[in-house]
Figure 1 (tube, rainbow, N blue to C red):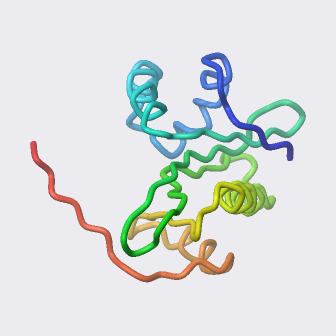
Figure 2: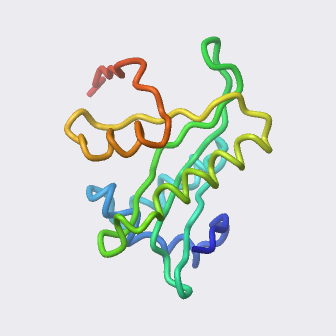
Length: 140
């Protein structure tokens, strides 16, 4: 799999169907509208390609906080449903790890929905540590 940063609108359009498998509430218009401020805040989108077709997508930011220091945060990670269990997710995260290390990050962090038990096993098998719960409070 060839992994590259997604930088153009055409590239974003090409990877959207894969990303939408994870974020199924988004249509192309909402994605385009949200992407711009996210990119300004440092969101980076990477795609993995097999035979020129996108099969995996990762959306990542770099930030700093008091408990992890400088770290990469994976907001989005998805492999096309027709290409799952082929090693693409692990390869994508390895790319994110390497990129984060090059960016002087101390860790890579992500969240996963409580119901996504298969994903949890995948992350644990890759050496991720389950170390906290994430909470949200809706303001609307």
